[in-house]
Image (cartoon, rainbow, N blue to C red; front, side, top):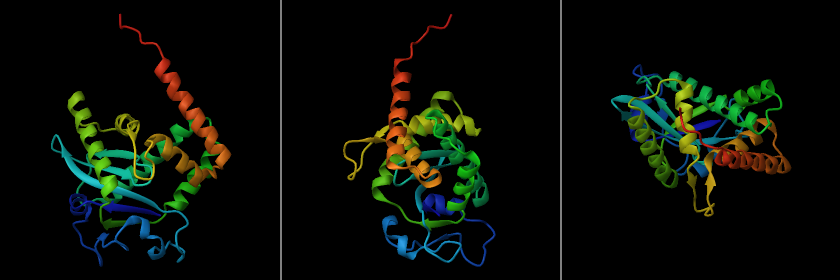
Length: 234
């Protein structure tokens, strides 16, 4: 299950114009995302086995409607420009497409994409249900604001708001390679590494030994990138 914790701005933007029997964005089941577990029910009537909590904010960049979403646990962020007001289906489709593609690419880079079809089926199964609630989380909110500023800066640098998933993924990568720290992880971490491990644990059954391998390969890739020579253009 995915819980989208919406800022007031995003809650107002994503709410469909045609009101249903109940509003899309509802009141949260508990004051804090970490306390939701006992209050959530999955499609089978049982508590969900896996819950992802995301914080989502709406912002206009160069007059374009955009959303920035950040996973509360890993602080992994993704940007979604050119959204349509009152179109939750469009947002959900863009969200699932981007997350799956970015994680497949990351898993491939560390040679951990064992069975794509099985991982895809598991991804769909664990995220079959979603929930939009009006709630924030103070610690994540500060990192989300930094991601929004980074997004706006990048758009200013290139002179436009990107449209394709591929162009947005470049911005996602830049944001997620920013070192972060929390009260629980004061020594710092990188969101892209943390999300890859979390995703592989969820959809690929990653063990502790496997996670150690993933982290070593991921850091080897980073070291190789930093050692890569620069060449002047002719």
